[in-house]
Image 1 (tube, one colour):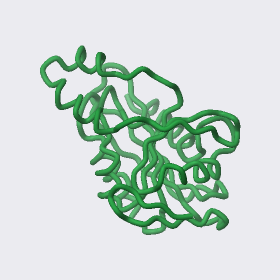
Image 2 (tube, rainbow, N blue to C red):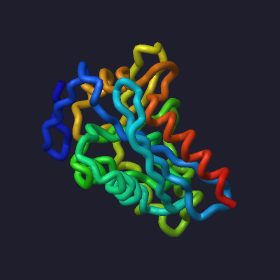
Image 3 (cartoon, rainbow, N blue to C red):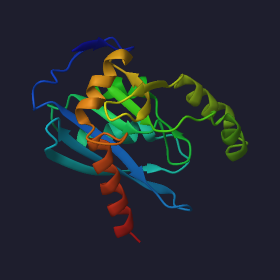
Length: 200
């Protein structure tokens, strides 16, 4: 399986091998907090977990891309094959630059959402009256989401970089046991929530 993303690197993922690894990334935060918990879980396609790490990102900020790249670097390993992120917009409009994240990590990136929405431009303008234009540029740069129906029968919406979009579905299917959330992302979300509940 191969694909060429917008940053020009050819990706080769051999899904028949149990050792393919995905880094699942998710976050958790409470209203009123300035920082959210970012969690990363490295999981093989046979669902064995062999790495976890934690980070932070600013609620309402602009550091989501660099925070995820820093989280990836914490693992200090070269056997991760791709990154899956729960959402492309974290922590109250902290917007990921998907292409830049792929460039920084030299890995394909798949950002996942689970519901069809009409867009958030109005919400951005209301929340950031003084800095809406920069946020809107970042949001528009994300482009349109692509809808995919997983082997579980559930629909998911993706934005990708570094892997051809039509080749993304087999990767997601390989890591999804049930529902619409791939296991690396689901476990990362559990870890982020657990860490958030542990902190005052």
